[in-house]
Length: 155
Image (cartoon, rainbow, N blue to C red):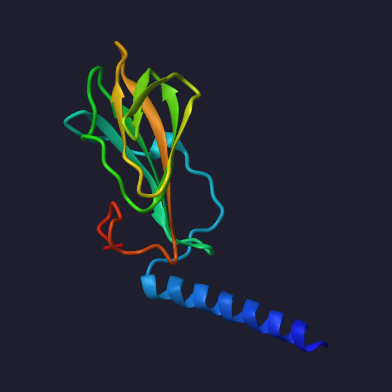
């Protein structure tokens, strides 16, 4: 084996070990492949509609991977536009949302996707006459700073 090859193997082994240590330190088991059946996910009523927690766990490559489903009543938003260091993707399942990204408002219909980059201002509002439901997927890499996270760096 060449010295370069040995170095590459050593670096890959070290990276895998660090990822395993980080996951073990979080205390939660690593999420494995599975199906999440929406029928069994109970809604939590909020002031603006409801929220269904789908999953929130570490994975082999992420410190934390989180998803939930939010439903907003007509005219409602959960909070004013905000920002955080983790990135998130939202997919509109039903209704009509207005996504405000860095001060720019855009109407988003069923099937539309909204990506919120790290540190950028974003907010959502139901601008339709019926309830609006959207899926939220957030990921927290192992090296993500603890400050500025939407969870306050507590998970």
